Image 1 (tube, rainbow, N blue to C red):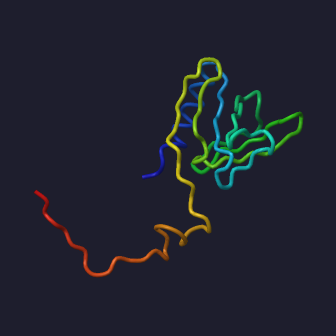
Image 2 (cartoon, helix red, strand yellow):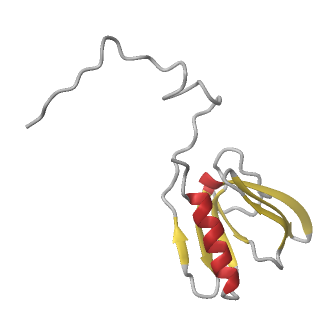
Image 3 (cartoon, rainbow, N blue to C red):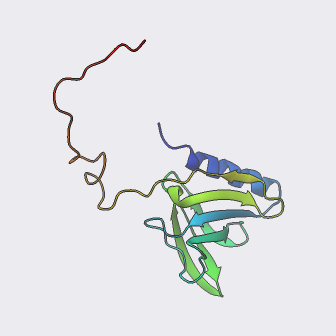
Amino acid sequence: MKPSRPYLLRALYEWIVDNECTPHLLVNAEYPEVKVPSGFASDGQIVLNVSPSAVRHLHLDNEAVSFEGRFGGVSHSLYIPTGAVMAIYARENGQGMVFEIDPMPPEGGPGEGPGGDDAPKPAGRPSLKVVK
C-alpha cells in the first residue's frame, strides 16, 4: 500500500486552514533531500509556517511538500520529502498530528543497501512450519 502520511498531511492542512488557524510543519532538517534555508534549523529540526498568506506555490503531493517562503526577508524554495515531516499542527491550539519517525532511506539509491536488488537471496526452497 502507498504511505498514508501524504494523504493525512493534505487533509490536516485543509482542516487547519478551514478552521482559520495557521498550519505549521515540524520537519527533520537532516533527512535526505530536505532543502530548507541553512541557519534556521535547531537541533536538526525546523518549524515552518505553511499558511496560504506565508508561502507561495504550495504543492503537497505523495512524494514531497514544496513551496516558496521568505526567511529573513529573502525568498527561498523549499523541498521537504513527506518522510521528513514529523508533525503538522495549528499554531493557535496545537491540534494536529505527530507522525512516526521514518527511518532514513538507504544511501546510494535503489538496488543498494538492505532490501535492494543486490541483497543476498535466501538459499533453498521456501518452507512453512506448523506452530501449535
